[in-house]
Length: 464
Image 1 (tube, helix red, strand yellow):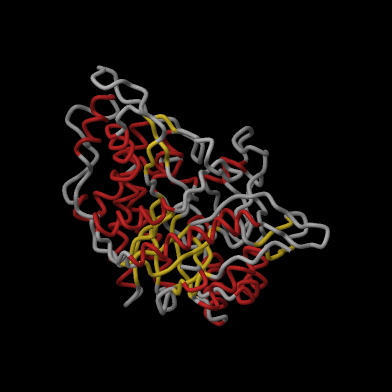
Image 2 (cartoon, rainbow, N blue to C red):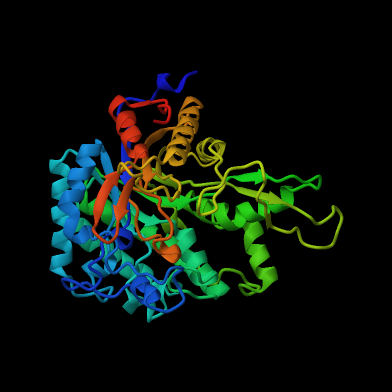
């Protein structure tokens, strides 16, 4: 069926997403405290291009212009995150009123423009003062998060009706505490497992506080998830798939939906010496019930699948090898992600039929391509446009299978600070000149504007 006939359900939410550290700048203004990303980026050698988010897109000062940009684009919703140290500079205790007022003005401006705010409370910028006490590896940080969630929702809960507790707890725990590529930059496997639990626990504890302070609001969490694709191998890959799926998908999904931590993964961690023989000693009575608190939706971040192959022969005593495979017949984005739209349909369908989370949103989906303005000032980002078109077609197929997908947020509204890559990657549908802070809609943005206006997947126009 031609894509121009692919209508989305009435009321489908069309939006774009950003995060505080990646766009706001103003890293030490108006009483804001230091975050782990402030500390990490100011540590030599941590960021690919040596940059920081000190200024980024200067959204803290340019937010009115950015709302005008969103309104011109025709966004129905805007997903953004709140900087915890901008609200509670020390992580707990004294509230920074200037920080609260900034987000209150932002919410009012969005609502005036007819744009629904989707607020993410934690997108990785933990107050450094809490990290100095152990960060997410400590249970006290989960307690501090509930205090933070309460402060923010008491201020904004009368206007914000969509709350996301955490963005990608996998990235925080694994990239930050195990692999060291993200702040706080640790290589501590046991700490990573504790962090993953305390992140989920803080989510569960915060859900009732958000509901109390924001009556009638929807509350959820956003996970990054990886559908698995077999690579070219004649050797069975099922053991490899199950192991990878357990570490990166089921470890977060299962406890959120009342299934506790997967027993096979717990056994793997015991065998590897990551946890003692008596298991997850940091899990206290009542924790798993709290983590499985009822939510109103699941946010799904999808960029690419993981293609795996197993080079260990059947019957071997060796462990299956988790080998990431880059197949020559596939397209890859500038950041190295495989372009595989079917993975989005497969992922959404699996979540619906296996976990039944109810309503879902694609809270991030996008691609990094470096296309900049041509001589005429136009950004002809055909590869991104094609990526988005094909992934939206996959999302539409999932809806046809009965998946209750309620909305889609492109990542990202604008080019921004891309974590350990600095400014070397551009995910935005709006091009940003970081020297002048000029914004230019890319061709993908103009196409997305038409998609949103028609609530239908519009076929890309031929290049001109």
